[in-house]
Length: 107
Image (cartoon, rainbow, N blue to C red; front, side, top):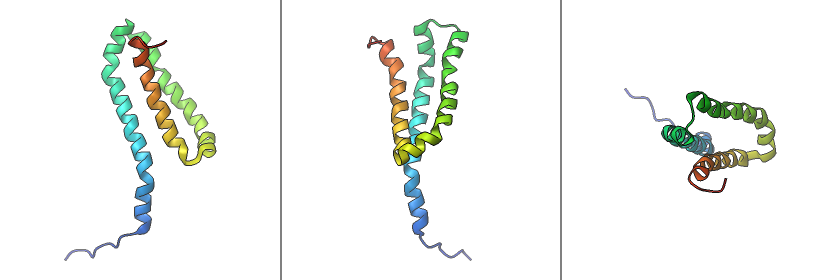
């Protein structure tokens, strides 16, 4: 004997709809970090950096993450629903900077 079907709930569908933005932001962040990880050996070679120097460079990510977490509450309150998409866009643009400066862009 099977369980009776669960009626479609408006609250469930609105929660799913509300989750699409954050899910897209996390997917975008995963793509950015994945792309960075794939280019890490080339970046290390271009910079002719030692493992210690690369470690110091990579240390900027967690330091920036802690600073962002400290500022997140105030920023989220000030920007409201626009905070997450704006932060995702800024992070994606930040990932473009090393590539443009390394390959002859301004900088």
